[in-house]
Amino acid sequence: MLDQVFETTGPTAEFDRGLWTTLSELGLTRLTAGEESGGSGAGWPEAAVLLAASGASAAPVPLAENDLLAGWLADTAELSADPAAVRTVAVLGTDGVADRVPWARDADTMVVLWPAGDGWRVAEVARTDVGLTEAANLAGEPRDRVVVDLAALDGVAVPGTVARELHLRGALSRALAMTGASGRVLDIVVEHTTTRAQFGRPVAAFQAVQHLVADIATGDALGRAAAEAAVSAVMEHGFDSTATEFAIAAARSCVGHAASTTVRNAHQAMGAIGFTAEHSLHRFTNRLLSWRGDFGSVRSWDDALTAAAAAAGGDGLWPLITGGHRP
Image (cartoon, rainbow, N blue to C red):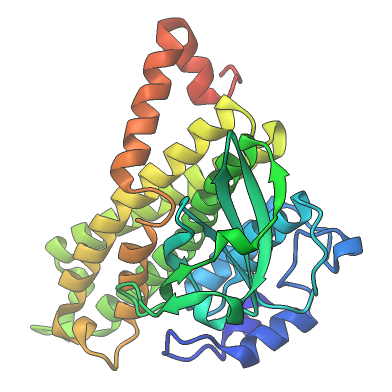
């Protein structure tokens, strides 16, 4: 069903309002929100399927931002809002500035989070009430700079754990979208190498090409397994858990490192055609390279894994890796 929903996605990175309307009518734009908030009452497993499908189609819509990030943050702060509004989220500095805000130019409102005193505050502001400088990531998706007048906002006080959970939610959301994009790259490369012939036989018959494709498949499988394990950790422990933070860090590390190999090998296997604007490959490879830097760099997640392993020590490392489950 999701394949049919996303099959009309075009090659542009601009916000697709027609697709957004369809997703909204199907109850997918606020999938995890409670029915009292205009949502469908689903959980992270269902969101994982949706985000992977969105990544596999390079859908130019803010599904994660509207539901799992801005929507969740607004609900946590008990802000009343129009469930039909398109929302994104921005973490502001004390100067009221946030860079690389996804889909800011296309949002109706922004749910903003900023440090205030010893805690954090949350407010929702209309897009027309913020200063905005347009920018984009490597894939052409909106990543704008916004400026908000904090003096004009009261906001709702929230504990510091909210800021940490928002970061983890964003990191997991991107990991799930990356699994979808990675799987799509694998499909594109397999189709090309098995149907295109060189020297009288399919390109896939050459051992060097087989190695390229095998490495892509390996990274795709590892990233998918790590992301699924992170979703399981969220369902079992919630976000306020060392096990969950470790699982999300592992997922982001796996998909981040796999992205480098996937992009390099895919373009090698495809040759010059994969670099052309007319071919679909770059739509997914550029997104993989862009998304791996959202909500923390690959290096930062590697460092988080190292720190967690060191803190667990010899006796605690195996339970940390297995989530407390024995073989």
